[in-house]
Amino acid sequence: MSNPAGSAAARLSYPIPTAWFAAAVAVPGLGLLAWPGRSWSVMLVVESLLAALFVTDAVRCTSPHRIAVTRDAPDSVTVGEPAVIVWTVENRTDRVSRVVMADALWPSLHADRRRVELNMAPRARARVRTLLQPARRGRFPLDEVTVRTTGPMRLVCRQAARSVPGSMRVMPAYPSRDEVRRRLHAPRVLEGLGSRRSVGVGTEFDQLRDFNPDDEFRNIDWASTMRFQRPIVKQYRTERNQNVVVLLDNGRVMAGTVGGVARVEHGMDAVLAVTQAACTVGDRVGLVTFDRQVRSIVVSSSSRRQLDRMAEAMFMLEPDLTESAYTAAFSAAAARFTRRALYIVITDLVEATVDEVLVPALPILTRRHLVVVGGVQDPAVAEWAGGPTTNAMHRWPSEAFRQAAAVAAQSRRERAVARLSSAGAVVVDAAPGRLGIELVDTYLRL
Image 1: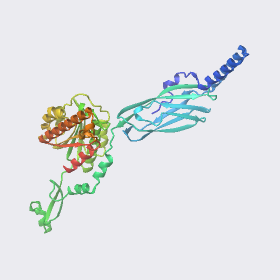
Image 2: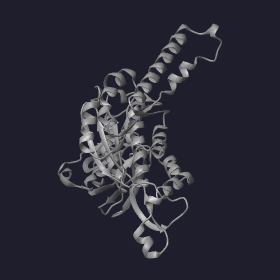
Image 3: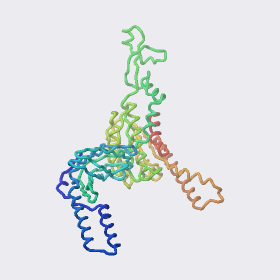
Image 4: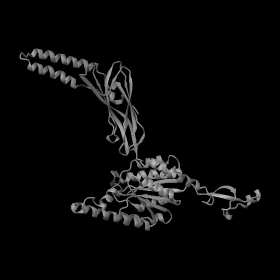
């Protein structure tokens, strides 16, 4: 990703006076003003000398177009996880060059530095690193780099900008990764995965083995029994490649923040957690993102690259500040994923939305599929509903009103959960940072 000279080489970089030159002009001028026998001839000599020094330094100053810059940046990084950009700066002249290079990196990438100063020997090359801590998802183009060179006497600098094109994709944060891995590798989970191959479970044939007293007679393989002259039974296992479909709401209700993070960000963490769990178990997982329309569909797969595909489908999403079309999204998902599946709908449990839109649309899925609905609680509401710890006699009226509003909000949320449960859905209402973990627990339990 480099363009060291390109079309910018054709543009002239004019000499610019530095602060050192301004000081060199100011100090003699102040001295001449303070000198009682000021003479215009002395001032003319001083100014002529300074002008000669300026021209000499400008001639000896390295052209910024003779300084090559390349940028080595990763194609994709993850929100909150460190990444490194490496600049390679090359002096293509035969003289010592003082170089300042500045890269126009996006502020949300939180680079620890965007500007480097180098004193480069002739034909030298330097590699400089900067650490990134991305704070926002999206695609970030990387383009303009500015190079400034300074003359040997530091009286003149020359500056030019050139294009070093590139781009970086910042993927959704996945803070639940470590906890999900611990759950998937816990002994009880491993034991549960092993039990999927136990006798009498599932309908897929696994192997033949000797008869045990606890086996059912209907599983006896009579042909093998006659051949080996001892009771032989068929062992079955639970079907692999079951389908899991995650529907991520990207509408208005997901734009609000909980714990300083937008609800849709919590939802993306949950999508990645469920994907990792399903692929580890051996099930197929797909994704539908929607708001007023379906934004993206990721086909079901259990491959190791499915987690990357999920992140790729979500990293450009920004909440749409309109009501989500649950009916259209559920219909599109049911038409695309025709096999019976576990559907996980990630949204917010707002009573009005649940009653008016979500519950009427649920039968599209519940008549044939198992449905889980997940949402994130607001801990501030629970704290306000608990009331202040101070004496009630010294409470401000605003605190009482806030507590009443919080209690009413909690009641509405509980009614929404009850409505979804009565409509046939399993509801997971989790604290911030826990939605992905609790959805994985629910998935493994189901």
